[in-house]
Length: 113
Length: 110
Image (cartoon, rainbow over all chains, first blue to last red; front, top):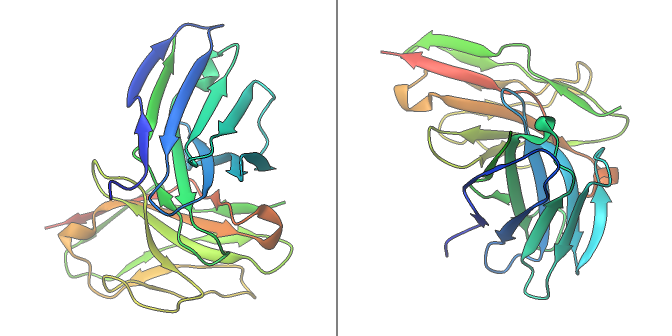
């Protein structure tokens, strides 16, 4: 089991562009959450997907949107990129139940220039 | 408001010395508290959670609801403990997602 996998590992975008980040959850996991980690800070919760619907959302603008597919993989989309969107984007997956452990991916490093 | 604070950005100790990484939280309810660790070039991984009340790699953490703290302790630090440590909380009204602190970088010197 490769665990949680994210792609791409790095990318550079220009201000105003749109970006899509991808996440495949750990085998057997059906819930995916996305986090933004700015340099020198802890991860900040963006949103969570379960059964192909957004279930919880953190304090992020509508420019941040997502999707979950029937195979539980997920995408994070960011429109109208700002310089401040430069960060490490982490995906975490977990199985059903409130006590299951969340597993994190290696992250995608997004740089907006 | 839900918040996790870790007052030390960097903590340096010598090998064999005791370690205490501080974590305080604010949450109106009964949160679940966690410590996550990130070793160099590795992904974020769970170190321990307060409900399991177990010791992992010699680390322990006790939830003090009166002081709203969840400090991480180890009696004798090892060089391989050098890493970034994040305290996090998850509340019932937060969909089992995490509020993370800013992290403390632990450096264990030989």
